[in-house]
Image 1 (tube, rainbow, N blue to C red):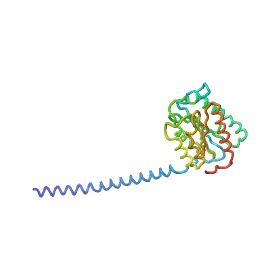
Image 2 (image 1 turned 90 degrees about the vertical axis):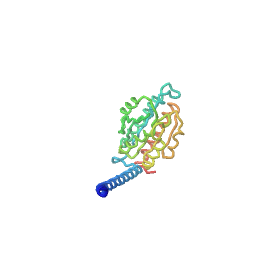
Image 3 (image 1 turned 120 degrees about the horizontal axis):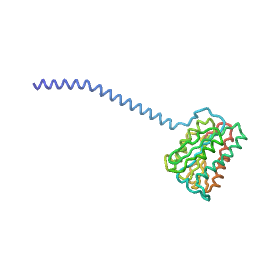
Image 4 (image 1 turned 135 degrees about the vertical axis):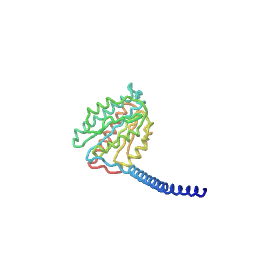
Length: 263
């Protein structure tokens, strides 16, 4: 009887092995295949993340400027030497800065200027995508800036605006940031600026105006082809913006009539 039971048990073991072993092998093969696919996908993502930026449309003469405006909580504080909050002073200074665009467009109608407006606090808002310069449209956007509140996501604002520069269809590309503080949310502007500088091969220029804060916080810009100017009052802010916009962006944009030299 015992011999019969053992024989029966061995038979069942052989049957189970015959059924389960192929299934286990198939399971291992499927697992290995998934691992290989995941590894290839990860390698592809890494390669893409390190690849230089590519324009999404055909590019020609012209300049695209993404203006990034700080609307964090501190911007509702009163500006130095002024009874108004900093965000109102900044809004008026940016509007005055753009007066130079009217004169530029009248002088060089063949050279397109495209401007987008973004605000940032704890998150980023695209207020006007990069489009051909339209003074009235930009004035309306500036007049309706979000009221200040929240943190300061400078780096994330730079990341948000950068791809739009590559959809603008022009060679010259600029980020102009107006902020009164340091980054509190998301990736740091230092990290993002270095990433943009490397992957754009110097084609995207980054300029900051440090309003009522130390420009030393953004000294890294000088290492990546950019610049920062400090401004303590509303009058200094207007001077700083005019110096960057007219003295650097517009002057540099027409300094070469061809694709900018990669640095």
